Structure formats: structure tokens, C-alpha cells
Image (cartoon, rainbow, N blue to C red):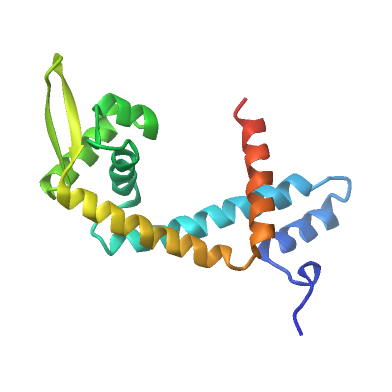
Length: 169
């Protein structure tokens, strides 16, 4: 017989119970939500990091490859576009690009329209790797989401979208 959700305890419940004892005047609803969101984010980051490590890349390096892949053919963006999309400094981006270029997953070439500019393009090897890695990473996420039925997963996605929208201004 399965337990009802309110009967299962998690580490956040213990924290909330402690606060209730010492500060019963506090409404800890936000702490319950964001404590769980934070713990879930860390747990999923760990799972996805392990999935990408099997391909010899970090999450950050995957993000670069995936951004190029999502841009569509010819899978080319400028370092500035990549930095803006990934919210990285140019220095942070340069380090990732250097490693990915050495691995043969992307190439940098001069921008024919701007002598000071560069283009970053996925190689065939990079395209194949990111296509495989995205499937493995998504499978890890899907496995975790299987704790919810499809309707619950959709409701959660909708609620998180609204919450995110309200915090982004």
C-alpha cells in the first residue's frame, strides 16, 4: 500500500518542523517550496553531470555544444552570442571553447564580415556527440520525472513557469 504524499517526510520537512518549534509565528511555505526546488536542482545537476561525463564533457561544455546545436544549421554562432545566451563572461567562454576545439568538437574561424570577429561552429564529431549526449541527459531527467504522472508533470511545469516568470521581472 502506497503512502499518501503528506505522510512521506523529506529533509525539508525536518527543517520546517524545527522552525515551527522555535518560531511558530513564521509562515514557512516559501521555505518548503524553494528548499525543495534547490535540493532538486542540485540532485538533477549531479545526475546530468554524470550523464555528460560519459562523453568526456562537463555540463558547461555540453551547454556550449547544445547552444550551437539549437541554433540550427550551420550550427554557427559568435563567441559573443554564446556568452550572452549562456550568461558567461568572455573569459569563461574562451576556456570552454579552447577545450572543445582541442577535442575536435567545434572549430573557430574568422568572421568574413568582421575582421575582429570569430565564428564558432560545431564539427561533425561535435554534432554527433551533442545529439547523443542530449538524449542521455534527457533520459536521466525523464527517469526522475517518472515519479509523477504526465498530468502532474504538466501541472508542475506550468506552476514553475509562472513562478519563474514572476521572479524574472
